[in-house]
Length: 624
Image (cartoon, helix red, strand yellow):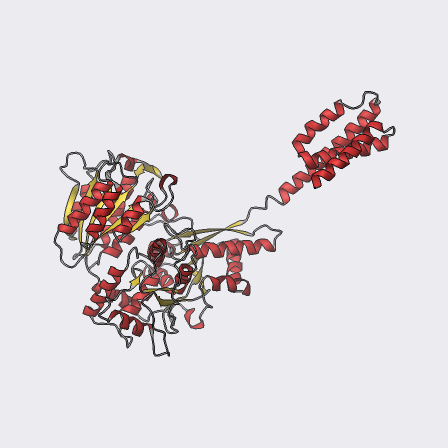
């Protein structure tokens, strides 16, 4: 419609221009034509169009009249250019916002990103549409960052936080005060100045019991969560099932363990009962390193756990089909229908979601963090946080030391869990194909050297009762088989043999991934080892290059070997992907294989391999 109006005005002006005999009318007509051309054609096309107009003016027009017309059109072009420049610099390009570096937990990273984006939009609403901050959210486990935070992000002998984790954070949003205590304890033990400036709880998320087998509803305060879980786990038929995240990798998993390792009266169970319950949880849980990976696996399969102990925050995201974060769940997935309501008990332990400010933050960033904290505690953020599964901060859950939301003796809970956990029998198969020689970061560091470093660091998790073996694929030159070091108990001599063996390998050849998976799982299935967690862990940076077996046959073999109580885990780095390889939709081959093997596929950048490997082995080994 506007274009039609402009064309109509231009037509009238053209008629006047051809018949005008005074300077004023000529100037007005030329101005209208120039303005209409910019309106309808755009600036660059208008310049060419108006030049043609000036050259094609009526032959009888005097030189003075031609000058008037050209000047009027030129004036419009200059004004139009000035207006365009003002609009370009004011509306479309806001001043550079202050980068706010926010460190989050892996389980809370997705929610943290959403909260940070909402805050940035809130700052823009009062600033002519220009956000005052640019939030940069990144995630790492507490075990990975606690030492770096205590040292104020300075390097240590084996840790380079800036390179391995990211920039020094302006603010930290862990899941619980338990995470903050770890940093404080390291600083105290190392006689380091405390990095903690201020700690504020921004919400709470209780541990809930949910699932298709959960039908009981607490009738009074006497119906505690340990009492209800004990009734579930102590039944004989049908066989009990309970999923929970690993307490050594997840704070929510630790709070869940403090529930299922207690009896109906709230006391820690006897060792034999703890062993039985820990086994039930492990057998019921696939991909349970943390609660996001645990529930993501169910969501992708369109299933609901029989029973699960998880935080209200993550369960609510699960039932609403929101993105959980983590591999395979970065986008919303429709949830199964008719999901049961979770059991929420007032006395249950809870994540207290602290916001941690640091002593090293500059004055400008400190003011930005203060405004972020005030917004999170304001009514403007209440509805957003509530929809995300967070309740109001609990007054009794805002202190580091005396905190009603946390177990009174978390170290005791962890000790009982570690003693109850079965020792591990783990075979690690490391990809030594030619692509593993690709450099990472510096010219001296390759994917393989980083992997070897990760193996060496992970061996620190190995207990004397745990067993470990090492393979390489393809078969290294000069060796008769994939085996570098046979599976054996984790003695100091065995650990040294593993590290020395890796030093003799040079990356070369293809990637017979599927054949290695079948052979490795078969080796664990036929070997002896008693009552142990048996798992094959594969580290690879590419897709299968072997011809046999194919994916379908490998999946069938993995399912068969899983029935022999062997699990499969894959750490994918480099070009390897757990999902959507080469534009294909749906689960990738690595995800399909680990799901069939009741394990997990973990994506890790080259610099993340040591942390990922240590976290996984901490789950599989007892450490004692």
